Length: 329
Ligand SMILES: Cc1cc2nc3c(=O)[nH]c(=O)nc-3n(C[C@H](O)[C@H](O)[C@H](O)COP(=O)(O)OP(=O)(O)OC[C@H]3O[C@@H](n4cnc5c(N)ncnc54)[C@H](O)[C@@H]3O)c2cc1C
Ligand code: SF4
Image 1 (cartoon, rainbow, N blue to C red):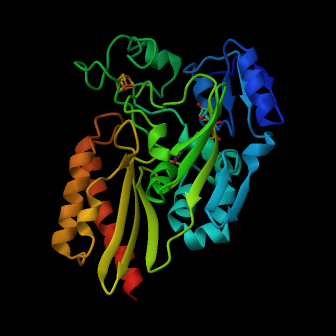
Image 2 (cartoon, rainbow, N blue to C red):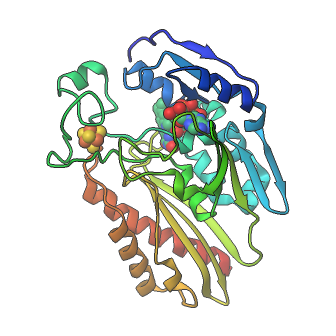
């Protein structure tokens, strides 16, 4: 890993100060835990002269529950979310996804906002400068073509955050603040299906809060599972989040989402067709088919895309079966 280049660190204490600082600078990047961004800066992937650190911004530390649900400031760390008894109880999928990110020391500083906004990944991009230079770069950075799909006009670098699919099945919304004020949108709207331009945030905007609706009453369970090369400290080659509810052995709601396979996290559409049905082998195969149709990994890692696709379909089916079994006992 290369030496960190020179930059100026700005440490605002409030949201207004952070936005004002951003507005006063021609070029700058927000930084939270820095576990994704600093590695990329050291690799020469995201050069910047100004870093605006968000971890001291009071508004981004919000962590409270009320009648509407759970409100999590973007600078709350993954370690806090993974260890919180209320989240483990009512939003298990989020606690499990947060606990599955990187390693324990990363999670002490890594934030939920940074996890949602992390850069997309590709074998040809997440490399040292000399390695990339030997390939003349690629379309995502310092190059002309895509080495994964050479005929392509777009980049397929994979979105690899663990918590996004968990928050998608929980129907989270996010609050965004920027020079033109703030807005609240479904989390789905944060992502753009393009490995280069992967977020819909406009210049100067940041995610400030994640809002998760109160858990519905009834027999409901959720969980997250991921495929990775090493059992710890590794990005998902594919990750699946499922939330399911059942009554008398029949599904009353089902949500599934996937990460690691495309340039955005994927909310699996068509899950409503399982409502009112028992989740037998035939339905399991149908869910696997839905996931297969909606995910399209390409060779952005050393692991074969066909394997990741098969794994993600199998994980979706098995995770749903396991959750329903747990609900029925
Ligand atoms: C060895 C290693 C293993 C890893 N394994 C995993 C893994 O298994 N799963 C996984 O998901 N990640 C993994 N990561 C990546 C990273 O650690 C996590 O994604 C982490 O949650 C990023 O959060 P952060 O606060 O450190 O983000 P930062 O590095 O501070 O920021 C990441 C990006 O988000 C932007 N950003 C930060 N906060 C905001 C905000 N509030 N609004 C808008 N933009 C913002 C930054 O500008 C930057 O572009 C790994 C990293 C390393 C080094
Ligand atoms: S998918 Fe293609 S353009 Fe995108 S990072 Fe990989 S090699 Fe580069």
